[in-house]
Amino acid sequence: MSVVKPKHQRLVLLLFAVSALIGAGLLAAYALRNQAAYFYVPSDLVAKPPEPGRAVRLGGMVQKGSIKTRGDGVTIDFLVGDGKVDVPVRFRGITPELFVEGSGVVAEGRMEGTTFVADNLLAKHDEKYVPREMKDMSKAQAAAVVAETK
Image (tube, rainbow, N blue to C red; front, side):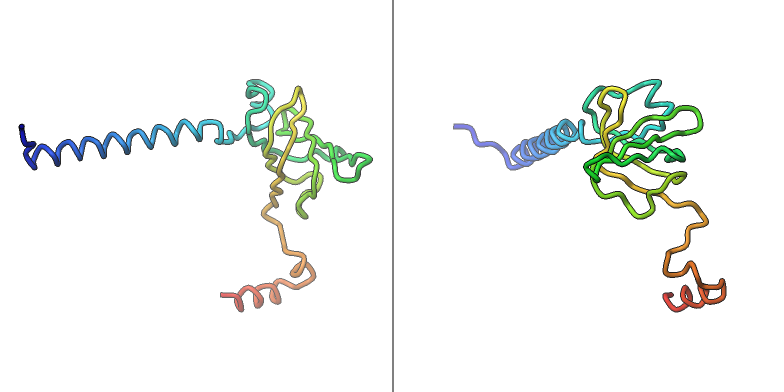
C-alpha cells in the first residue's frame, strides 16, 4: 500500500481548487451570457438589429409630438431618435416623471419586428434640470438650500 506524501496531497488539493474555481467562473459566464443588455442608439439598432428577443437598451431623444397613449391608458407609443433615424417604441406601465417629449431616454427591452418593446424606461434630464421644489427659488435661495445639505 503506497502512502501519498503530504507535499503531493497539497498539490492535488491545490489543482482541484483551481479547477473548481475555473469551472465556477465558466459556469457563471455561461449563465450570464444572455443577461447582458447591450446599448444601442437608433441608427445602430436599425443598421445591425439584435436577434429577436435579446435584451438590449435603446438610448436617444424622445421625438416631439410622438407620444401617443393607447385606449387602455397605460400603453404608450413614441419615437426615439438620434438625429439620423427614429425607432418606434411601445411601453406599457407608468412613465418616469422626467419622461417628456424632447428629453433623453434609455429604454430597456427587446425588438419585436420593427418596434422596440420597452419593459423599463429611464428618463434623463439635461444640464438645465432643476428639481420642482427649487424651480421657483432665486439662485441665492437655491444656493442656500444646497449649502444646508452639505
